[in-house]
Each structure stands twice: as structure tokens, then as C-alpha cells.
Length: 309
Image 1 (tube, rainbow, N blue to C red):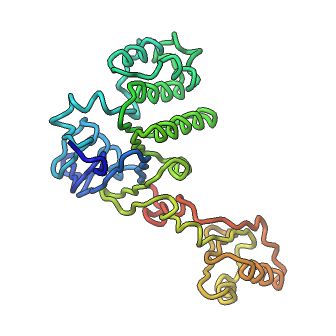
Image 2: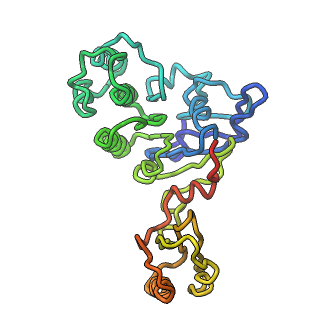
Image 3: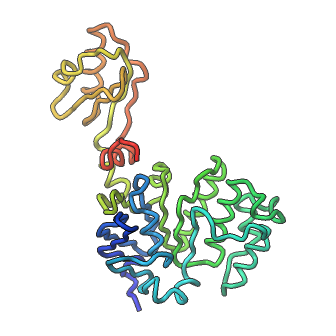
């Protein structure tokens, strides 16, 4: 029986291969009880494969995985009532109607959520009698989320939970995730929406090329906002080296695109005055001047690069 302090999900040196391709290459991570953990990475980084192993859908080639102290392959029957899974696609009978599908799954659990309350909360009450195949893409995603949580699981895996949702539906999904966390449910989600991870996650795990390359809270990864950036637009031929020489010690400047400039460092009155005075002396109007903190997206791109995968 795992201790309360033990990780709910413990992955050690996981390796998964597809023929000659190694999708997961010695990945190690731990998910703490009652927390929201976001797994981020570029396409093909190994996120979904890792989650599929944790969910018991895929067998690893090497390494060890424990979920709630159990082996997802060997102990699948014991885990299924305790774990909710929201897949990117599939896993649903297309001819079943929305309410009957949710009620059927609820009936398999001892203390489920009220299906009708979930339908109302996720904006699906009007589509309760609609077959799954006739739901819109956003409605299908919301139903998949409802199916994942209706049994009151101890642990929920959410794979791209808000993909294709409109802003109202995204916020409804976020509120549901926050309520799960408040109720002590452990949530593991993978997402390409970095603002979603920044809003929801207690811990962020960045995966690339089958390995964990960074982990920590959003605040830890973004440096607690201490290092901020000053952004502005101007002519594409500004003397970046000259501006750099004028800046206070420890600050830097780069042109991120023609005419777009980012000054990084301890952004305060002195740095702001230096930049505006330098521009004024050269007859340059710094358009869109704004102070921003380093975002999770900035960190993600620094870690994984900007090339398309």
C-alpha cells in the first residue's frame, strides 16, 4: 500500500520504441498527490506515448511505471475504477446518445457524479439526446471530459482537454480541473496551450525527444517574474549593438523579427529611461512599448527551440 507521501505516478527510466524509432528514451518523472501536473512538449516529444503507458494502453520496452502504487499492465483491473482517462480521440461508441453514455459509465462506479449535473455544467444538456457522432467537435471534447471524471476517480489523465474548444468552454473545463484539485484529485494533463498550463498547473514537466528536460512550478520555470522584458517596435535597422552598450549592466537586447525588439533584464525606471532616451536621441518612436514578464511560452521555446517538428 503506497504511503500518502509517495508519488501517485512514478515513471523511472521509461523506454518505448516504435520499430527503429525510440519515442521515449529513459524518461523519469513523478506526479505528486492532489496536484495538477502539466506535461508539455513539441509534437513527437513522447508525451502521449508516456501517458498511454501510464494508462495501461501501451507496454513499455524498458523501465518501470507505477500508478497509485500498481503496475498499469499487470494491475489494470484494480486501477480502472480509480483512474479517469480522457483520450485525444476514440474510446466512444458513435451511435450512443450523450446522456445514456454518461449514465452507463456512472452506473459502473460506486459513488459517481450526477450525470445530469455534469451535462449542465459542461453545456451539454441541450445535446443530451444527440448521438455522439452528431455532436460538434467541441461537444465531443466536453463529453470526453465528463466521461473521464464522472466516476469520481482518484487520478485523472487529460490529453489535450481543451483542444478545439471555444473560450467559454475552455473556461468551463478549467473550472472543472480546479474543482478536481480542490477535492484532492490528482490531475495529469498534456496540452499545447501554454497559458492553460500556466493557469492550472502546480508542476510543469517539459519533455523533448523522449526525455524530461525541465520540471518545476510555472513560477520556478519563469524565474518568479524577477527578470522581465521590455518590448517595442521601430525601424528594422536600429543599432542594436549601440543600444546594448547604453543599457545598465546585466541587460541585453535582441531583434526578434524585423522591427521588433526585446530588452531583457531587471526592468525598472533606469532601464526604461535609458531605452526611451536612446530612442529619442535618434528620432525613433518606440511603438507598443510594454513591460512583460518572462512567460512559460518563452521558457518552452528556449528549451525546445523554434524549428517546426
